[in-house]
Each structure stands twice: as structure tokens, then as C-alpha cells.
Length: 236
Image 1 (cartoon, rainbow, N blue to C red):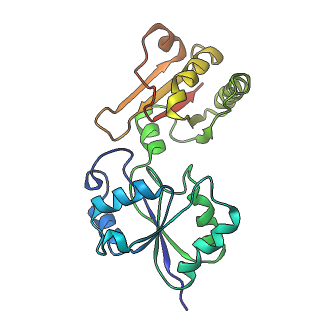
Image 2 (tube, helix red, strand yellow):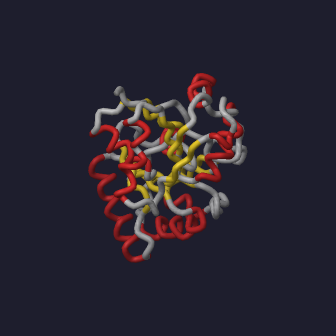
Image 3 (cartoon, rainbow, N blue to C red):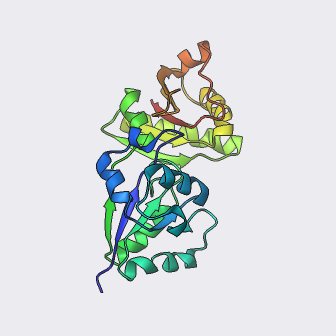
């Protein structure tokens, strides 16, 4: 039997209508699907309700894949695809499988030669890089930095050194309620001339993307980033 297709479905980065940030062709591919693997069932149902699926919302099958999912459960999540059914993979925000547990399912699907189709949609990392004015030819994403202050500061100095040596933009994120602590850590650990971008609420009404040197950030009041999704980028 021919296996199904795994569709990687981007979702809005915040509370906006899907048609404002997703192409009509993407919405048309999502609507007929009835089986999904999602990071968060509640937010995925809200997204699918807004999209307007062909089948009633109650008839859709949603299986969760998140940080609590055991590795042995991945094989079960792939079963519908092996049986010939198309499946949609949905992250809680943005593009699935990028800084997202869905990457494990995609890796397994690749090993089994299952067809994978990435759909077009918003990526906070690329949007931040595009608007930063930093080096878009050479960059690296590091996910979350260590939470403990001493380890975080050491990592920041290492990333800054690597950025200077390779002319590489360093990109990282933080849990929104710890954004201010990370910003304070960057201003303490990094050199005055290092450029730092704060990209907040991307694609949302309150969007802000500002690039300043560390020295300039120290002299001005930074934007309010506490509890707002923010991408941090630096270039030494």
C-alpha cells in the first residue's frame, strides 16, 4: 500500500486570522485533512476551526506530540501514514519541526521514505533575520540558552566570539516571561559594539524589530518585551 503524505502546516504566530498570514493554497490543502499530529490540541482545534475544515471539527482525529511524548509513541503516530492516510503536523505557533517536537516525527517519516510536504507560512526566525539588518548569508539558531545565569553568560560570550570570528549572526529565543532576564544578561556579557536585535510580536499588530549596539541599548529604554514572544539576534 502506498503511504500517505505528511503535510507540515504553519500556523499564525499569534491571535490573528489564518487568511492574514497563510496563502489560500495552503488553507485549501489543510481543509480536506481529517488526521493531525499537534503540539497542543486546544490551540490546534482553534486554528482548524478558523480555517474551516471540510469535516466537522468533532470528526477530526488529533494526536498530541510535545515535550511530554515518549519516544516509543512516535511509531504509533506514524501508523496512519503507513496505512495510506494523509496527516497534518501542526506546531503551537509558526512552522512545525523548527524548534518544535514535530521534528522527531519528520525524521522518522524521512527514514521510512514517507512523502513530506512543507507548506508556506510564517517563521519567526526568518522574519526576525530579514528585518534585523544583520548577516543573512551566515547565521545559526541556538534555541534556548541555559537558564542559570553563570552558564548563560558563558554561552553568550562564546556565541559572541564565534560571531566575531565567522561574521555569523547568532539567533536564540527565551520563554517570554524570562525575556528581560536574558536581555539584561546580554547587555552584561557582550561587548559594547556588538549589534543586538530584539524582534517582538512578529506578524502581529504590536510588531517591533529594533537593532542597536549593546552600548546603545544600555543608554535607552528597551521596548517592553516581558511576556511577549521575542527573537534575539546578535552580530559581533
